Length: 468
Ligand code: ARG
Image (cartoon, rainbow, N blue to C red; front, side, top):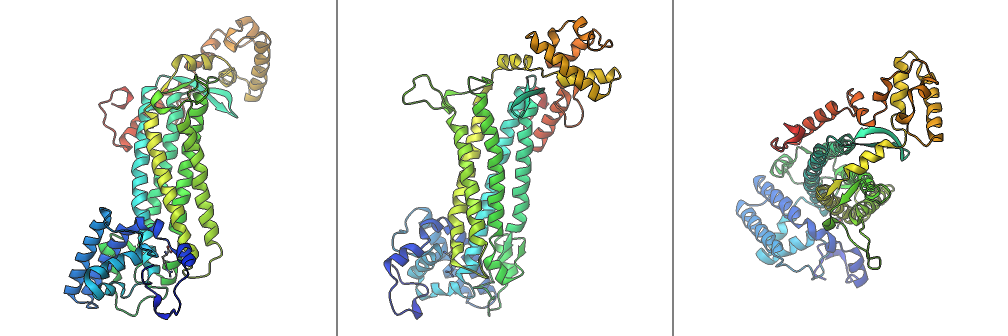
């Protein structure tokens, strides 16, 4: 172990097990760029306030730049027993410029430093996630557009319910992702608060210019309470919650891709490049990718629950328990990133089996509600109509027919007012067009939704289809 940044009051060396258990360098090393960025801003402010000399600041900032480059190129070893990334950067600084390097920690604590680093990290990854959400939305909208003329069974309780446009179904996920994007964007407002100057917990005796540091680092606000600033991890929890909801949405879409690609459904074909096989069953082609996205959702939820639990009993202010925020955060953000990347590509690798979907809407009395609505137009109450159509379904089931296969006379037996025009209401392909209300599955509405989505997502309009 290198010399401790806090070694002064200790008579004994730290036990090796304690070093191993206590250290966070193995995972917080990925914060190095943020740590250095924060140190540079802090150092410039110290000079501007006359707390250190300008030439001292120049040398420190220069050395920090070098350290950043060396870390970028893997030229600094993490193996030398550093406790955490803050210690490593400070030690590297001292190695370069001697005791002057130690001045960087004037008016600062690792407590406000780590709060800053994590905020910078969460700000960055939130923006990355937001970009990827948009890409995935674009893939969904493109797929919806390609399949604008396809009608499929809509389900409730996983039972065939009513005909809907496949594009409408796909755009439902676009709406979910849009809200996910909004949530990450709104989270940025609470992330973008600058904690430096809080020091260990009580603030600093030095005359720090916190506004200057905030400006240098692009923060919109500075924290208002030093004790809150060093002990708050709400912003990490919020990120984990937003990530969990996003994963839940992707998991539902994944689940649909899994069942749709089964032989039982046969609605979807996933390209060979995006499937895997079996080591024993030669015929198998498995949808491992959507399964893995579905599976990894549990792991992101787990990180949310783990940090919520870590935080729940902590007295103010900083407690070492909080070091546990990082692995949860890093793993969740890595998981979300890769899942979005995979989902986005996967959506470009699926094709719908139009024949199969066309067959599917013919079975299961999908137009029963349309028929009831037809009877309401003939003057019945909806309850009367519902009852009659229920009976007609029973008759059709008895005869192993669909509703449109009943004769006009058979139908008239249920209600005299049923006329030849009923057959139009029994064609599932014509059903969506009757639902052209706002938010409905009518082709005009869906086309409009696609146009709006393309506009929002900045998609170029030369791809043909409904986008133009
Ligand atoms: N590695 C620590 C963490 O991740 C850094 C802050 C340490 N502060 C302290 N007072 N021990 O939370």
